Image (cartoon, rainbow, N blue to C red; front, side, top):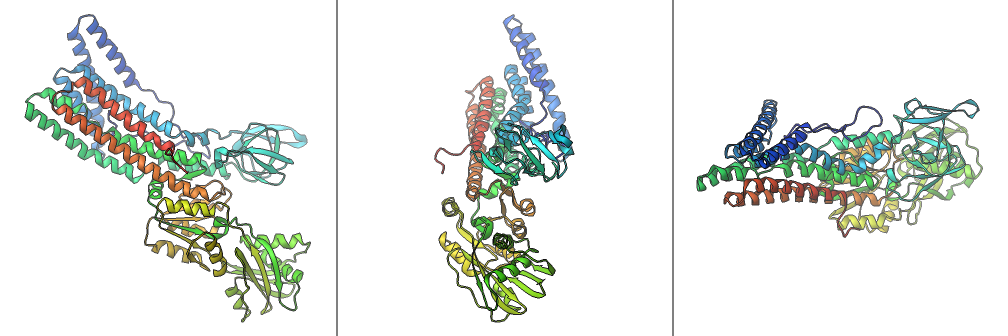
Length: 629
């Protein structure tokens, strides 16, 4: 069996926010015709008409060979090398020496190659397709008086109230209006247990409503919803080809040359053209062309089952070789939800007065710390005045005019430029400080605490076990804070108080490559793009970070980072095993056939056994090894 390079069918779905990845169901007329011709030949032989059987089988085989040859010539004129040359030569040789039954088997394998590829690829895409097949096409929009109107999901607009019935998929991103509901998020995040959401909570499109009808207020259109983003990434992943797949294509050329060399030497040694046919029918490059793509599709499908969207096949290959892993701190190693622990005002300010001014200034910041400060102030019942002017320096702090005061909030170095002599706040493990100055004088600090993720230590240990040599933390936070967190995880390499460009430079200059970078915020987008493999944490994370990353973790689970590396290693291992298994078996069969002891018909059948073994081995990428953490 052989599949021409450059003529593989299209794998992408039609345009639009959602759609199936599976190909349109195909028919295989040449396969059906070959089977009918084969039955006719067997019937003629049973009827005692060997000459008619030979002419029928030979004519069909030659016709298919001419058809394939014409396609091969077109490929060559287009600059694509087709490896069907081996199959065409094998058919011709078997017909010439009278082995027309073997020729029909080769024709069946040749014409059935597309069917086998479709089956294997669709099996490998199982989890990817599971994501796409769930895409809803209708939404139940609530009108005046509670009337329910079924509309196309593309017609839903932010603010529309939608009814989601039990066992239905949420059509667009929204917020829950009903008091409480349970949702099955397993198809997106990989979490097996239902998740309870309450009124006001965000609900992502693509999750399954469990047991009761609920009302949802749309916060995005279908095209802008999380599910559409996932679909786009899945399409991109399925259409991509890993470097090892392109390398396998190049293996096919020397493989073809080697097959002709063995056939030529066999002819020279035996002086019998039948041996040439026997060698050529077992020379198959199919494991080279099919096994690697199937393995990589299986790896991406397995990743999707684990709540990971790997955007292209090449990423799996780089994941398999990762030697350095760098992590942002806030929201990645930690939960990203800092809590106010203490307020340390400097005279003449008291705790509430300082917190009120700082929270008022932080209203104009998008940083996660700013959100925590505002929530802490509101929890104390403080009324936050509006600022007349406000300016934020990304990753440094905010300057605002509040109640006639110039308020500077942020890192110590930033505040010290306005209030020289700003003292350093002593911090405990996992704590960080927000400094404040009012009218050019140091006004005090707010001490925040952000807990380290429960799975962080185990993730670092697993990455080390997987062969990652360097683990480092890159953060814009103060040195004391970053070092405390790193020490809790047993990490010694930290780069604190760094700007986005510092992170990019560190990743680009890392000596042990490839470099994996894990982050979740807008300021992580540049470094995720600069890394060999960028990993964006959390389905609800920054759109900019998700677009810049090569891998998107659909749940806030740091251990999925190690799972991505593990899947990459497994996929590469299986792909290369499949390629070399096919090569080894094909070469062994060629050498046996060269001795003249392997009849052409048995050789043609054994050729397909080799193909099946290589492809079945490639499908092992869908699952992990027996002993897997």
